[in-house]
Image (tube, rainbow, N blue to C red; front, side, top):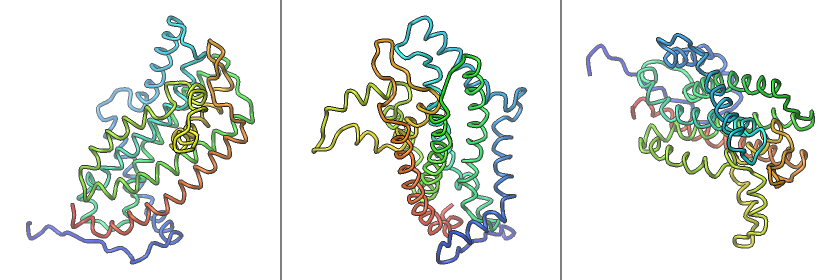
Amino acid sequence: MQANDVVVRTSEPPRLRIVRRVGEIASRRDVLLNLVRKELKVKYVSSVLGAAWSLLNPVVFLAVFSFVTHITGLALPEYPIYLLSALLAWNFFTTTITNAARSVVDNGNLVKKVAFPREVLPLSSVGVAGFDYVLQSAVLFLFMLVVGQGVTASSFALYPLAVLALLAFTAALSFLIAALNVRYRDVQHLLNLALLVWFWLTPIVYAEGLVQEKLRAVHLAGVNAFKLYLLNPMTVISIGLHRALYGLHATAEGKPALVSYSVGEIALLLTVVLVASLIVLRITWKVFFDLSGDFAEEL
């Protein structure tokens, strides 16, 4: 180490006090905003279209799957809307936690030399992915208006609840993965494998109603298999987004495309996921906080 290199180990307070910590993060929101801007600039550096690439991604999806649906006669009507309503949320989720896993490691110099709430680092990953999610959702909404996709006000009311549950669950995992990856670098590699399996356990590309129909009569250790399927928070979030944006459709064979739950029952499921995610967020935030005082030494 050179004599003029200064490494500062920031020792955090012994206990995490949520209200006080939120105030500290708010007071250093300039660091958070600068990190989000930096990541967005790096993402679109030397790009002629810039952020327009985020808009092109769902446009291409919609065009391709509209063509495939027309040519092959896929069982789900308006399949592009069904797909993207959950896929955009999944992309937000995976992009956030993948970037959060390296958020502390990649900003090692900043961690070593500047005193600021370390939570800003994984939260910046939420901000970057959230920017793309907002733009891409706007494309989906515009497409729904063009094709005349009808959704009821009561069903659409599930949308903000589903997004809140998505944000809380994503933030909770981001804190945990960001902290663990500083000490155990294998976490980021295991994460890629876990997300691959997780994707196919979530009703994004296949009809959730058919899953319910097939698992309804299956019991594992005396528990209905579909209820076990709902233990996946991203499943419940996808179900909420499908009902909010896709509506009540059946497959071409007349089988259910969506689960048979009412809007109220889905709202209850989303509320459970939201509350559980907030509890987990409190736990993972504490884990991150407890480990963050040693980040400078471990990097």
